[in-house]
Image 1 (cartoon, rainbow, N blue to C red):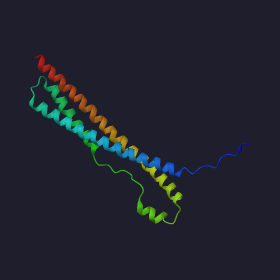
Image 2: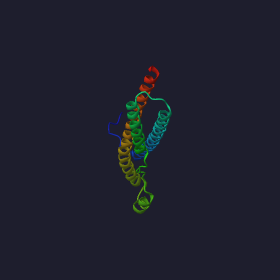
Image 3: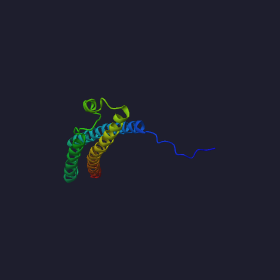
Image 4: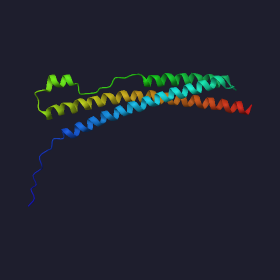
Length: 157
């Protein structure tokens, strides 16, 4: 005979704790990736600027616009690369002060709450960093297109 009584709910605190920790680790990797992209954008913009300074030009207006866009790309990439503080719980001192005499599950439940809140805050900061990086990318791309167009004009004339 089968017993139809529902099973007692399981405490999923450990699972939630692990998932929240993984989310913060993903955010850390995302921040590192965005920083790498921002550094690369600055480098590419610098290479294009150096190329412009020594290459013959066809249209000063195209090159002038490209230079403005390259400097904009550098500034935008630097805005993305600037140091940002991220929430990285747990605060060990606060844990000791508030939870030293509490049971492990109660502490983990509070940590899950803290980790989730940190993940939300960090995600918002990372979205801004990604937005700055994307703007830098498009500014650099447009500048490269203008420089390429000028190169074509130099070859045609």
